[in-house]
Length: 252
Length: 221
Image (tube, rainbow over all chains, first blue to last red; front, side, top):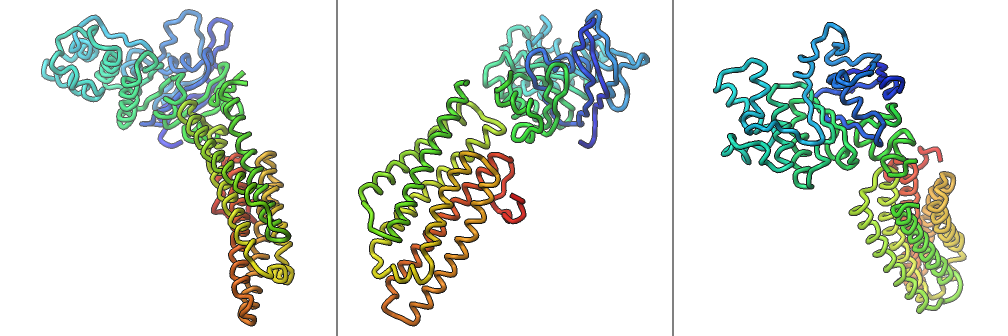
């Protein structure tokens, strides 16, 4: 893998005594989509949350090893966690728009970051909504409540909200698992388009979604990284038997 | 066994079934060529069974693709099944062509004996059997045996055809029989090539490597 965006070295995570991630080492390439797959409890979401230090919010969590983003260890004590989260956006399984207007949902982050100019905010809102492929659907009702949008629209709005603060990396935790096939397909198409500008890491239980959307796939099991490789190779000839058993549904 | 595994097992059994039917047709075609005329009714019945199975296998594969989205070894197994079934159906058709043509070759026994066609025909029978065996066992040694047999059959066939052409040049009365025999030999060679293709798909199924345009000697089987 060339052009590495994130380099993980011997990363382990403990919830109290329990070791939930075991010496994970991997590289995530820039401007590619990397899918994290594995059965429930394997550590893939925990790992995803390590990338923007979301696990900091959980008591009793201890992390060892390094998470280098652009060569900088984000767990270094001199690193500002707010800046990290600005650069590393996150989209969750359940869409979570603010109970505000569509416009305000997108403008909220930039405003907090100090942007006050109305024209500049208007531009950010339009660009973000366009990038998230929802502009045409909402451009005539930007003042309406975001809560009135459909589930699929809300999720794309949340992606637009993430884009509005100009991140480098987008983390997606099961972003389409609660959506119908048409909305899912829109999100997947969006992932394809966004990778031109962003590095995307996506956790999914849907194997076909991982196969369709990602360039690289990492398989986690019981807190260990079993295999990472090009998605095409993982889904045609995985190197590890455990990976083969999982993707062919013969696990356990 | 999961529902999906039962489907895969069913597909495998249908491939074994169609393979055995084609083998029967080849055995009958060799018999028709080397010894006595054979019962046409039975051949037709088997041909029709092969055709029906070929379609059935395509339908099973289509359904697995649509409903199960197979990956990795399962994907290769189903891709191979579709190809193999197609190859087997052609083997069946060629065997029937041999049977039909062999019936009308007058004085064929002299030419057969003179150019050792009996040995070639028995090897075609053997390669068909070995091909079915390699699908069943997925054994690399058997795959290698199929490749070697194919080379031998090709050489024997080319030699016999050269000999028959020479014979036709010097004895015009064997031209009709000779021409028919050359066509039969070409059919037998084609059967052997289809067997080789099947062995290549079995190799793909097991090793995930497409070798259909590679030199078999380089494979170290």
